[in-house]
Length: 355
Image (cartoon, rainbow, N blue to C red; front, top):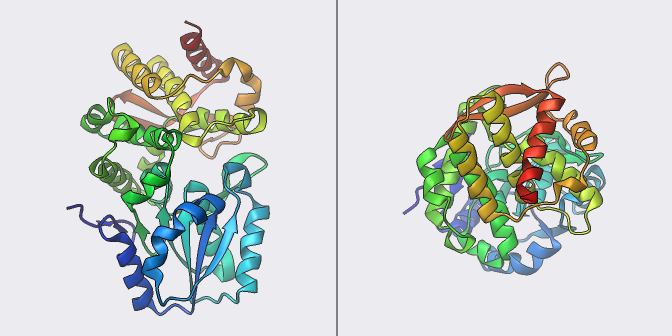
């Protein structure tokens, strides 16, 4: 049995999750209930939840899926719907979706009338192990990811393994990137336990451990002043690749696919400047390439990628910031790299896919 995890003032439920949500709603006496969905989760996930809302009145707010829609315009649409439905400060927002829905729904709730309660029901593997834990809310601005947002904790998170059955294999593999990252930065035994799994072999227990790792980190450092920064491993370069892919590719990378590219590049940076051994670099590279398709990084130019990185939240004093490994299972933060060093890491990835 997987026990409820206590995070920063709220529970993360793994057992009887929809019943736990119903109990919370009934006990809290909310004046209004809203469910934020995208067109996919309304079709595939909402029907699994609705039997547990029998006798409870609620309104549905729908947004379009995809990172390109996680912006102020869609957020304004959510706020307007809340106004039209008569939401007051004793309302509850249920965010039923992946990272886009939980990030944007959390931000919309945290800022509407200076804050209404919200809960997350993450519907993708990525959002279950990453986006739903830690109290970050946010939207993108001018293709800069999560640059507008808050630290606001949900009232609860409900992780239902059965929702993963609604996903295709590509979505599952995307979420697996963050699970691998958790092992790389914090728990070498966990990394080696999951590194040979396929997407179809991911167990609730592995998800539970991944959530536990992220929770241990964020409860130690809720506002990302220190240790929590290790969760950014792979994300400085990965976010830049994701941003340009969204702009240029007909079929853009999913978040986890971009982070996989970023982790290979940043493992190389870790080897070059932070003491990561060649053996660890090669093990990380093999593991990620075994699970993720190669991305034609030669299509993206270094100056364009670095221009995106210069807007990264981890930067200090105009230096581009990274979390870098010193060995598998141990990560340092507040590390910085020059443009030439970053270019070297990008060329390392390009050399792999050319060979």
